[in-house]
Image (cartoon, rainbow, N blue to C red; front, side, top):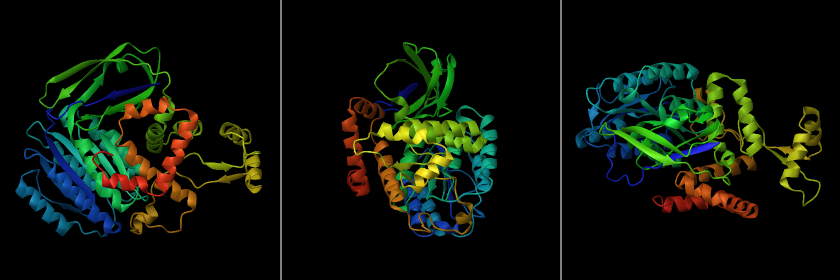
Length: 449
């Protein structure tokens, strides 16, 4: 296994690529109230970060399409003011959801350029649609014909649990962009602004790692190397057959269209459990790929990673096991489950209360029925049980922490911890997450947390 990080370093004086940005905003009926108000807030903040030589446009969609301007607009103060007024008048949630038509129009908008600007698309939705695989195939065919500055960077943002987050992740992978989500309306504005900053502040594009072309790759995540942002590291990980070289050469294109080349030393970190560090990332990427391709072998691969690392997935179920004695360890309990992992013995253990199955802790593949009913994101049809509430609270806090901690420092810290320390830290974080203490720290100190 290997992991590769490219840090922007001191990027304050580095030039970012000039942009042409199109926002696609879902205004179906389910976006009423807090969801659309938080999205408006995030979009106003994101538009204010554009330079005056950048171009932008906004497409609002439900069953119909509403466009801010018939052509791309320069991000002048007057144009941004008009965009704010337009959003107040036009971003009125009603109707159903149709993603393909506005996406095609957005691709057409960013493909028409007369200067050296980089195209960006930001899709924001809270619903699922029936033709999601068709949408991915349309975008895949479009991107296959384009390279360099003609290639559209597509980033996606899912709001709530009714949209298909794996569809959005797949779309972002195809477009070499980024994906993020908010499972409650209150965190949507902050997370969407972070996604915009991460995706659009590109200082190095078309990145190539020469070693990857000369080795037998078994896995590479993400499948396409993303651009380097001025505020966040670029990370790739995977598995290969053969030995690692002493150094690798990295090349790319800077914003002034000059070539960039650097030789980086390889560090062999024997004590870092890379399989567990990147388990969540791999599970999400592979699950999205399994959904898109319908490949059952990839589903099995996801299940194996989930069982090996303990991270939940769409294809596994977490259980609580009653041990024979108070001092029976986790490994012994896991062996007990694996040894009885057939349907008859599992039912027998469940009926005797030795095993309690927990609800599926995955995000799911969207809900067409609830989307059609225009239920607002976060609306709960039935009261969630305790395990589900704990999981959602903990994952919400952890996602905020991970996005703001130096990856290499975090890995190095974990590699030097004893098992007892890791257990204690996990319990502490779980307790803080349940009490929303980490949310409080984050809200008070967003710049340094």
